[in-house]
Image (cartoon, rainbow, N blue to C red; front, side, top):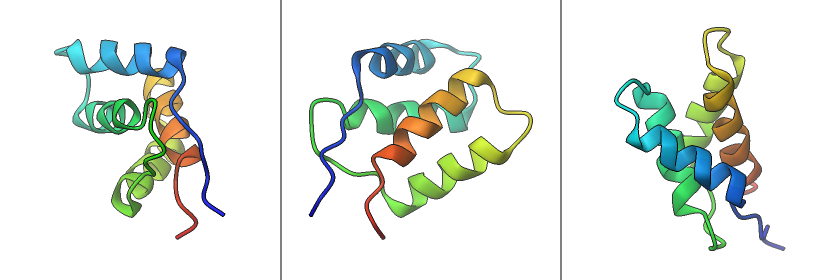
Length: 80
């Protein structure tokens, strides 16, 4: 059974702000793009994106915004 998770309005708004910010890190922008791509669709995160999200969550230097996006991306990860 496949998951039907989607990025919610709060996450998509945050992702749009991150993509428009010149100060955002490449990791944050990558996760934001993934979260936006999964809005209103049943697309799942790729294994590479899920790995990037997991690393962002465990890195002590990661901002709250990036961690929020990483959590959203991981929620939409497939089983394998």
